[in-house]
Length: 162
View 1: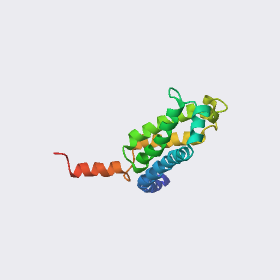
View 2: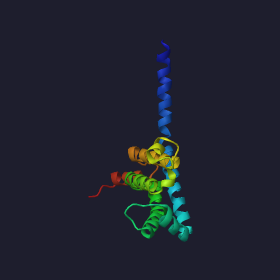
View 3: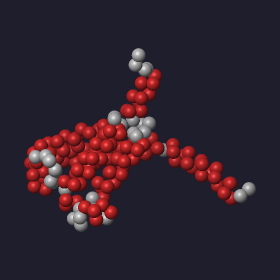
């Protein structure tokens, strides 16, 4: 028996074990991103005057007046992450947060002091890039089996609308 023939079954077993952790990995990934956004919302909510200052003088949110952007950003960060963390409408929520994350990066030029395109491949706004990649995984793979989306799908299969 060739060495490769002996290794392939081990590789297959490892792949099966690795695939079995996907539900937990997706759950942890969703919660990690959700907590990052939610904590930002908690900070904004706890300090309304600081939030008003940031949105009027530091952040440059396109198309929105600063007071409305501050209000909207705070409540988006307090509510939407719960949908992602619990796996409710996970793919649309991940798309929404991906776009929101991109707007956050564009609106805060201090995140990319060396220029946006240089920072995109450099070390600027690293957290935002990681969150974006994590959200892309949820967009591509869905919430996983440890989610409300999956639980509701199972209920629909067992009790189809008649």
